[in-house]
Every structure is written in C-alpha cells, then in structure tokens.
Length: 70
Image (tube, rainbow, N blue to C red):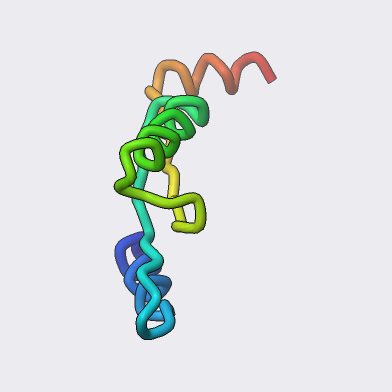
C-alpha cells in the first residue's frame, strides 16, 4: 500500500471534532527530520500531539559505502 493511502487511512480515523493532524517530513537524517518537526511546533503550525511521518532520503553512494562497512 502506498504511503499516501496509509496516511489517508490514518487521517480518516481522527474522531469528529478533533483537530489532530498528520505531517509528512522528509530529510537527509533523523536529526534533520527532528529539527523540521521542532520548527513546525515552534511556529504553531503543528502541536506536540500531532502525528509526524518522517522519511529519510539516503544518497545511493552513501548507502553503498555504509553497506560495505558491515
């Protein structure tokens, strides 16, 4: 199932009257994703109670070099 379909199902389960949100965050590292989440919360666009789906994009060259180390 595609990520968009899974997120749509999550969002559909939100109880009526609740303003809970799901945010999609894409970054180059977990730290970058966390910084983006912190920024969304600090700006007031998101709340601590919201859901965040983080995707880390890894360059193929980096991925291969990490694989060769193990």
